[in-house]
Image 1 (cartoon, one colour):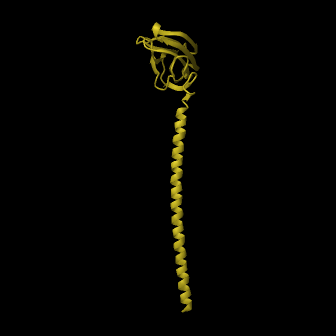
Image 2: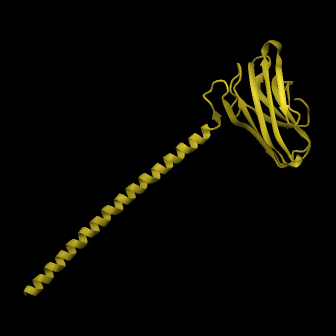
Image 3: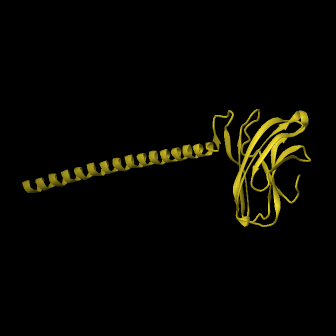
Length: 193
């Protein structure tokens, strides 16, 4: 009888120990799940912050003179043909009074040439035109007032085959910083629009 009681106590102690271990496993699983959720939330939050900072990299500077906006407009085509790219600025000659600075980069694969041009000017309301123009670079850079009164930049290409370009801007003089969406790129065989 004493042996049976000892065995019963041993079984009861074993069951108690099993219950304690099961409860600890449940606690550990709950803590791991909670920490896993916190880590997932932290990763998501960190990714959102990194994405936001990467988006802000499109503006370099504090908004004052010399601040640059990167990749404000871009163009790609795999088709060929000779034509011009016209870059319509949000500046109208009879309305605006803004200086501007454009830097156009890219690769004209079909021509096996680098695309790199700098164009500066002054959309000058008193003369209803663009003045104090300086252009430099590849693909015959040109600035002009279009028939709609807006200021345009133009680059000319012998072939558009796999052409990629990107436009950066800088705030200069009395001008504002042109940003993403401000410049419209138009492909046309015409010299001016």
